[in-house]
Image 1: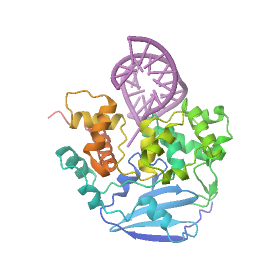
Image 2 (image 1 turned 45 degrees about the horizontal axis):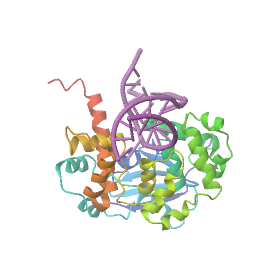
Image 3 (image 1 turned 180 degrees about the horizontal axis):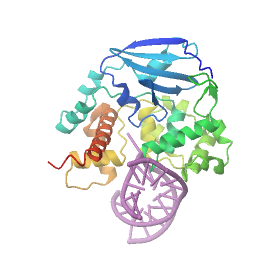
Length: 298
DNA sequence: AGCCAGGCAGAGA
DNA sequence: TCTCTGCATGGC
């Protein structure tokens, strides 16, 4: 079987960019490790990425134009020093940043981001990946890529809007099927204008997202942070809640709303970045504890 | 074999 | 405002 060779190549100088941490930090769910790098699909473009010394290398199968679509997704022009300088200077955050310096936020497509996080509720990240992979395999358009027959794009809202709840449930998404279907119908029907949210103030955009069934504060905040670039937004999930309670409020129990209120003032205008470092730090630590459980007995 | 997962909605106090 | 519960599914 002939596997088409990528025909276009781009090189993007970067500093402090940890591609592995970034693409495997639970903000995007379709990147797969391959050939020492990563394979994924952005919009209708298949992309492979590698970290090469002081640059990121990209391969694509269609005319890339000025590459702006990729530079903006990866935020290669964002200066990490500026981001880190906006953090409060405290031991927990220093530790978290030290563990994965170079972790970045992406700038994702709003529909894919919204749909993905609707599917994320009470699911492990591995499972979210599986459900999304299945959804794409069944309902995504084929685009030129690393496989001979093409690779699957993320399904458009209007494609999913035409599916029955049973068809969605068959992608193993359980009770989230009703939520995803309804979101797809409202987006496809123009009732929710995702493009228009860019121009709206943060609170208005958040309220618009929370109108969707199955979308509460946490999922709305993930979309506002990961797709719309609202850098101060601080999504609080179970991991981040654990991190805040353990690192900032040991032996106290705060209601989620109070924890969020603390986080959004304390972590400042780039709080969303701080949140991502804490999230990744806690996940990595949990993994190491699980793996190293035997060797701890010294 | 259970516990729990990048939550949310609805009900009840 | 806060707490409790049901919800599908499957990894570990």
